[in-house]
Length: 287
Ligand SMILES: [Zn+2]
Ligand SMILES: [Zn+2]
Image 1 (cartoon, rainbow, N blue to C red):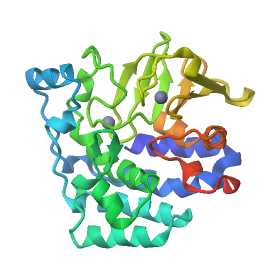
Image 2 (image 1 turned 30 degrees about the horizontal axis):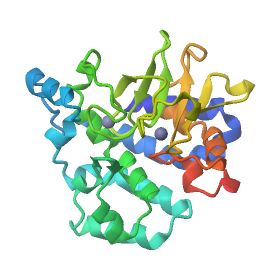
Image 3 (image 1 turned 180 degrees about the horizontal axis):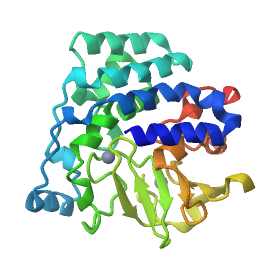
Image 4 (image 1 turned 60 degrees about the horizontal axis):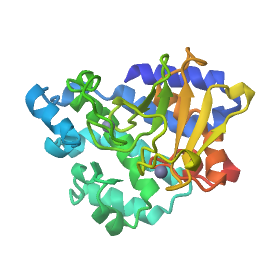
């Protein structure tokens, strides 16, 4: 994941005005880049089984859940906990999570996406963590391991006919959307790095197809190509980047994390996203 770190550093140069705001995210990208992917045995691609799984609308993780070792996630969970602590998240739940994790009472599987949510509800209740905090811990803590785990399956997503609003590999809700050269919308998963084509006039969160419920908030001139796609029915939103306008933009995750000012627009209008950015974690005044 060294490429993401290089893109991130380039973005910090490009978006000088946000450099200080975004700096707290840098240790996460550095920890990902230092993480050796060879630790994880990738899920073998078994065409018959996994295509059948997708045909039923079941993400691969539900059928073949990974068994990650706690030690393999430690180096990346640390920076995530530091980030949350530094952003004013209540320290007691974070301490409870860290202690439960160290004592082996919280399993890595507790962070995995489940139907309709990220991370196990038992852990959230046990530690009194906010859903945003748990989603961030999962997204940061699992990303390198899940990316490695699904490495052999990802190339088969295209043409699979998967058309749900969750990741075909890990089942997480989308973190970002790209408008591709041909005008199709591609959703991107921040938990495992997968991407899949999804209808432009459907809400990935609630499946709503009623055009009048969709709100498109466009960025100002200097952020041409960026948009917030929100749904009035469920109040969820996805940030979107038109790659036809910004052909030289970086990876979805880097562009997402690097544009918190756009999340602020959505946040102020009471829209939510399943995986928080700095705006959801820190009081807006501080961003
Ligand atoms: Zn995924
Ligand atoms: Zn919706």
